[in-house]
Image (cartoon, rainbow, N blue to C red; front, side):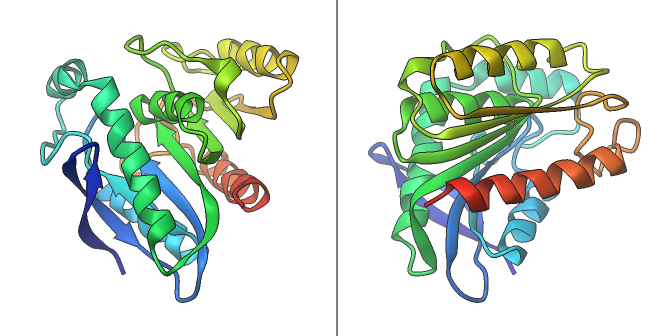
Length: 224
């Protein structure tokens, strides 16, 4: 169903994995974990297309992938967050120009590193109609929350020590106090990366299936 594509990004080009539904649908950019654009992320792009979305995962590491946490940490440290932002925004612009796209805004969804970049993009690009952040957090960016115009859904596991659920609840409260449309969903028996079904040591099927349903509903409601 999916295919590799190339799209413009801030005067350069970026590659990514693209899939479209049989008809038309709203646009969603899928943002990778620190492992790179691996088969799990490509599968998610295809799953979104199967649910009626036009989806694209930009390759933020530009061809590099890894299964090593040490190497993944190195790739994360080497990544330029502003370049990543341009690649994500470029992916959104590309999707909205596709003939299969029915929306004038796009959604962003990311996981771990990608979850943080979903938050960041939502505060920088007014074309983001909805953002879903799965346990998203790292210390390389400053979020301009007052600039966020779209809706956001924060998803976290209560067992996650790296991106604590408590912090996501506090963030949702802060955003609501700013008049933003923000929701939070946490799962009591879920750890970091609980959505990744290629990692049996942390995958939580029940939480993952519920989070997937909520993500689809959130995007269907808020991407226009």
